[in-house]
Length: 68
Image (cartoon, rainbow, N blue to C red; front, side):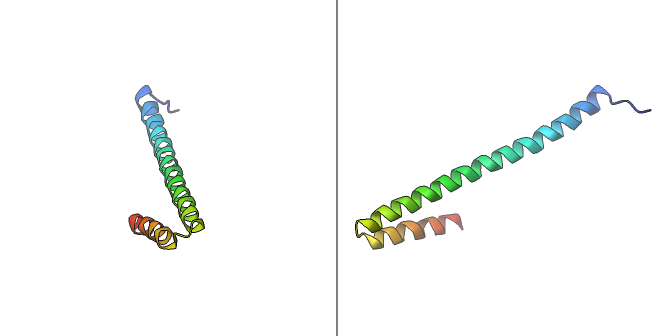
């Protein structure tokens, strides 16, 4: 029967923590990116509502270039 030593147990839990940390960081970055995109769209909508179509278009295209 094999027993798990303290060191091997620690290594297993560290790997799990690393995976969880990566997932949480990725989710956090995705939420920030979504918020920025939504804010940019809302600003463009307001500009278009004021009749500033060229500025709204430039705002949305600037965001598209930034993502690439």
